[in-house]
Image 1 (tube, rainbow, N blue to C red):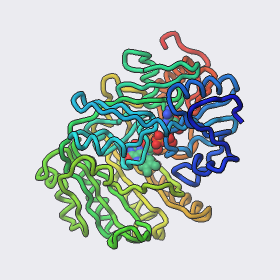
Image 2 (image 1 turned 90 degrees about the vertical axis):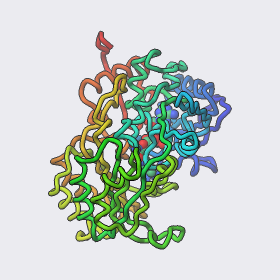
Image 3 (image 1 turned 180 degrees about the vertical axis):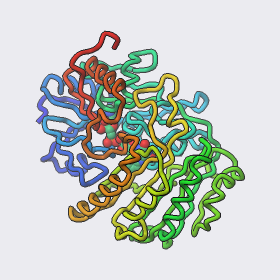
Length: 457
Ligand SMILES: Cc1cc2nc3c(=O)[nH]c(=O)nc-3n(C[C@H](O)[C@H](O)[C@H](O)COP(=O)(O)OP(=O)(O)OC[C@H]3O[C@@H](n4cnc5c(N)ncnc54)[C@H](O)[C@@H]3O)c2cc1C
């Protein structure tokens, strides 16, 4: 028990009746077992919690929504500080700036921004928290044009291991500001984030659905077109096996499709032209149209509610035709996969994701032409084992083209040093040693403090 921890917010222990809700992760196969779940009401609460943890030798895992709780691993001697009650939002539509409390999800911001003719760099799911998404990188529909969300962040407010409240910006604590943007929750509990958003009145967006049997043909055509796509266009090629849920429309319920989804910052005629060869394949359903940017939040049809899942991911230097054939032999219509993998997702990378912008954070760029992400919704351990085996085969087939991994897509414990080049990793560890020398904060992907800090740091 966290005796004498007095806060305005909530503390929930495993023995409490509301524990099940309090400790639930988005992936319900992840069973978070910290000493307690602590929900601060405001910044002052966070300072009190951090000081308490330091004085009592507890570790602190900061969290916003538990969308990526898997990598945290065991949480003995740890309290999870979930900032989900910190829900302030303010939008300055003239300056194109947004400020949010660190518990805010994209769904609370994207529709309002859209009404102002603005768009933030959110990803596929409106349910994801802005905090974790931004601190880890953030690849959304506008990423090839505007890069990762983390590099549109202009200020981060947090409480460090000394209980000090800091507003980190390019001018104030620039080393910490750099490290937070990619180094994640290893440096303190973030209480608020400010970021730039972009003028987008309308966007040509939608999805072309093809019968699953045509997956190979669709993926090959998409692959051939990648070098021709401008930075204004983001496309994904998916295989999606919709669950047999009664609430789904007839054409989706229990059905399987190969889908090319996309968002194009430009006029409809131009968008149609860049996607012409895919449309020429004759989709069964075509939803592309000029839309307000708010529609982007629903484009990927991500599940809104927690579910049991297992996943795999790799960034690929290139996607040769032979690799598509190999991947389809494991997960395509001719394979014996059935619908055991709910989602097979290829995202076009490159563009601004590959260019370092001035003043970028630790996650300045991401390598690779394509991101591979695959996920299976699994009802029990046997299904999870079967899905893991198939995911391992996909990842193994992709190995020769491996460019790295994007930490936000890695959903199990991993060695975070592999996510960064040696220099960036060393610098992250040195910033960690300055702000959290006792290694109190447990980010989902752990950055340990450097043993020695170089003179230059
Ligand atoms: C359905 C779904 C769709 C997704 N789509 C995309 C996508 O399109 N593009 C993309 O880039 N990613 C996507 N992701 C991945 C997503 O970016 C990561 O899961 C991200 O970590 C989620 O952040 P969170 O705050 O919601 O989750 P949390 O699990 O709450 O946080 C993850 C980590 O962020 C840090 N963190 C969170 N809050 C704080 C805080 N207050 N202070 C300090 N550190 C904090 C911690 O290290 C924490 O462990 C998706 C994930 C899901 C589940």
